[in-house]
Length: 286
Image (cartoon, rainbow, N blue to C red):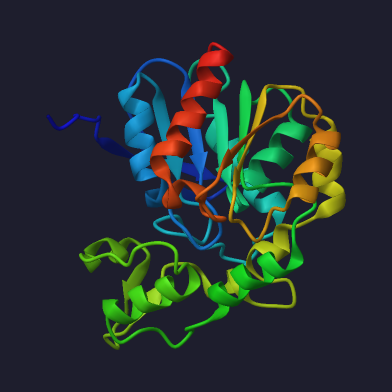
């Protein structure tokens, strides 16, 4: 028998003149706010959001500035403080008790900084393959992927090939229609990544731009709410040493290792990931 999940309803939030696009799943229970990684969209959370909403939670997924259906920054600004400000603007619009923040990569860095600097905004924090002390080679590989193919793709097959080359462990999709959530077809007929090219321009590009170690370390030291670090066992961004140092910074944090997943944990093993989140929420009665 096929399990039925709640469907998503679109939402928009004005963040100081920048329109943030998102989806709301389910109704009732604890509100969970899910923030994607650099180069992704809110749709990277669709399966996770549907599963968690199906278990009685209200789930909000957001496109970060310059990504997906959210507006591009008019001034081309994609610093850590910009993403934090956008998140705070969205949280101000939510009803009820403080939500649980669940952030992957860029979204996790944003959440960590926001919680450390504004301790009352969330009831719990889930960091998905996020630590303060990351592996430079892993970040470089992410940045290289985001920076490639600036001339676009001839068709969706080429898009699928590029994704498969970056993440060979993940099965290449048979139906390529889902890739349209990650690319846009321009007037020249070619397909281009959905994100603002300004996000990856300059010396500090993409996620490297928001790796403000001093600010993140200070924020981590001030986190007091229940915290879960979900680590991809095959991640090249988060190492054993990075986890060890993170636990020194946030001693009360719990760790869940998704052994078969890489840096994009939810997409690599969504079932195990969602179960780890639900177990954490249950133990903290959230």
